Amino acid sequence: MIQVVAMNGMTAHRANVIARRTGSEAMGIIKAQMIDLLKAKLQSGVAHFVYIKQSTGEVREAWGTCASNLMKATQNGRGLTGDQVNTVKYFDVVAGGYRSLRFENLVQVF
Image (tube, rainbow, N blue to C red):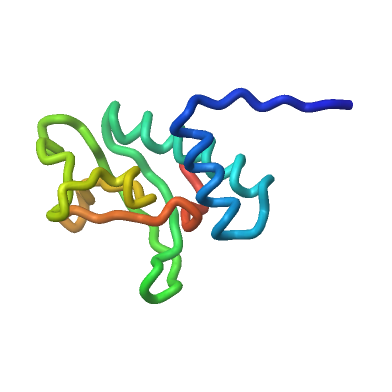
């Protein structure tokens, strides 16, 4: 049986980055689709998700948003968007600050 996964350009880019970092094409596709789901939920309100912190390796449960009223600035200090540096940027509604996570570190989206 042949399986086909249709992806837009950004999802394919994310899948390639994740596959390169994890060594698994399947993981790249799965996590890229999870990122799409997370970004949609972040844009529409507060999203609940879990990821592994890059700095410490600990599991972090987060509630965040990318709603336009809180995320007016879409670029970091270097003038790059999150996708350009292979991260998802969001506003943490519990901690009250901006955070980001690397694509491959996303574990689950609720």
